[in-house]
Image 1: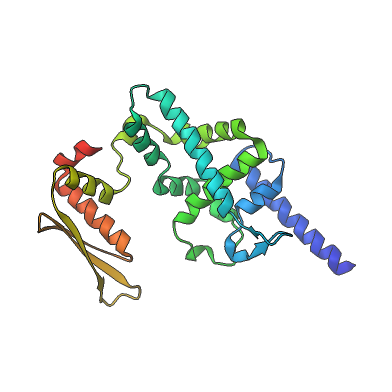
Image 2 (image 1 turned 30 degrees about the vertical axis):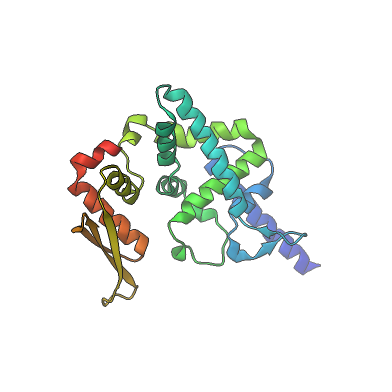
Length: 246
């Protein structure tokens, strides 16, 4: 009996600490704590419900992503009546980009609430944005759409969404470069190869060519990062021409 009592007391204490920390982030008291516990549970915990379904933040991330996109789309539709479908889609993509969501997650220190068997230092940057989306999903289930909309306005739109600033923000330099090359009927190519340097971590190098001429080189810990870095350098080399694509 004593062991059971100790376990229950320990669990109650953990839930109490979680509730206090969560309330500071939300700035309101949650009704159903279980949704938020799930939102901060990493898949490495290998938790399952009575039916064998996995308990982690990934399904809530999906729900939060859809809810966030809907609220942002509505805001842009009302805020920019002159914007066509292409403009609105591009602006929404900038607001809900992985980079932007990661910033939001970091600003709220959401990583401190995550329950995981993996040390925080081993998480990739995207964990911050993923958890933020899961949190949105949890709020939606706990409080409903209207309340969730108010939270997004307070935490995302009011402090971070400035239309004029976002119009000049680049989400992906690679996508921008490809779009520009296609529009200008230019050929392009990314020659990526593994870098055999002396680094402890494997690196990749890339040579970016436009019209068969190398215009930028870069090196990073993944092919994707190397291509993006080279594309960014190419953008600044052709900025006067490519900035019209923003």
